[in-house]
Length: 238
Image 1 (tube, rainbow, N blue to C red):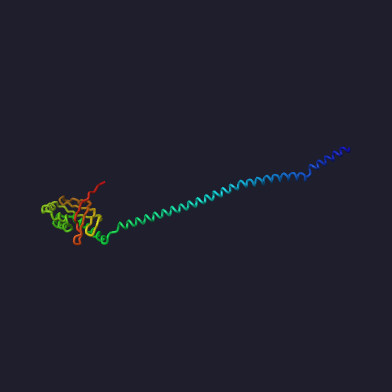
Image 2 (tube, rainbow, N blue to C red):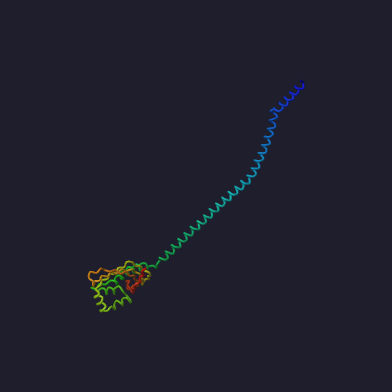
């Protein structure tokens, strides 16, 4: 019986030792400390690894900002160069245009007067009424000089008779003209002309219109611009 009690007491002590909360807590706490130490070490290691990455990211950002600034600076210089080129080209064009249009003093008036005279006189030289041939030829002589005047004066009576017998009435009209060269006493004009011809030799006929281009040389004689030469320019039909 004594042995049984001793055995029971030993069993109770063993059970008491196994169920002791203090013993279990000490072992568990030791385990937790060890785990925390491992996690702390891992955190420090990760921080050490991430730090170079962060530094590399910062370096990349700095390089990107530097590239953007350099790109903006380059774009600014390019834009400034383009603007300067445009301004220079505009100035050169304005200077060229002004110098091209410049004329010696007084030639502007000569140009205007020569153009007005040329329009009227070219129309006169292309107009004739068979009913008044002498009057028409006299008008030709009044607006001509030099060689052209001599040609008009050389028209014979036989030629005048032929013009009368043709029974045609021609009326010239300048539709466009321009001075291509001018000095104080000479000018060259190019003109587009429409000549309307009525043929009375054919009863009830409709007028016909001919279109020609002429170059005319004028000379200033005693203050009046007169035709010295008139040449028809061939018109190429395309």
